[in-house]
Image 1 (cartoon, rainbow, N blue to C red):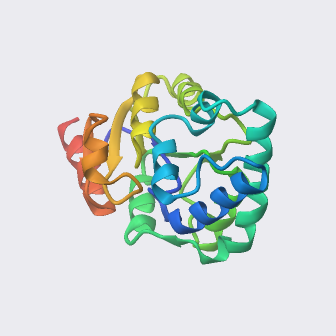
Image 2 (image 1 turned 90 degrees about the horizontal axis):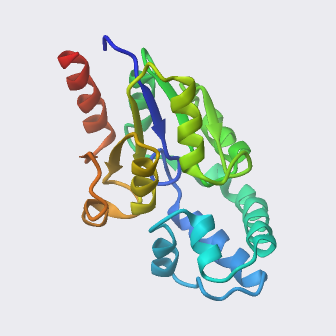
Length: 213
C-alpha cells in the first residue's frame, strides 16, 4: 500500500466476538443499579443506534448512574475476558493493514480490558486503544486523531448504526463491518461509505485503494 492512512477500528463486534458476554454483564449491571430499561438482547442492540452514553442520558439516567453502571460492567466483564475470541481473519487483517497504516482502536469499552484481550491473542499491530475511560465520545476521539494525522485519509470501521453516525459526524470515511452486532441490513440504514462482508474483504478494500493512489 503506497499512501499510509489512519484506520480506526471499533472493538466489540468488529475485532472481537463479544456480544454474549457484553450482554450478560451489561444487562446485569443495569439491573443491579435499578435500571430495568435494558433487559433483552434487542433492547441492548437498540442502545447502539447512537452513542451508548448519550442514549442512556436521553432515557433519563443521570451521569452518576451511567458511570456506576459502566464501572460495574467493567468489573463484571473481567471474569470473562479469557473467553473472548477474535473474529476469524481479524488478526491477519490488522497485521496486514498495520504494515503501512496507523491503526487505532476506538471503543465504548474499557481500554485496559481491550488491551488485555488483544495482547492475549498476540495482537500488537495498533498504536493505542481509546476506551470510554479516556473519552466517552467516539466523535471527539476520532477528531483528535484526525487532527494529529491531518495529512492522512481517515477511516472508521464500526459494526453498529451508532458507529457509522459518529464516524460521519466526525467527517471521516465510514466502513460497516457486516459480521458485527447490527448486521448488514441494519448497517445499511446508516448509509456507510462501504460495507465489508469479512475481514478479508476489508483488506481487499484497502489494497484496491492503494492501487488507485
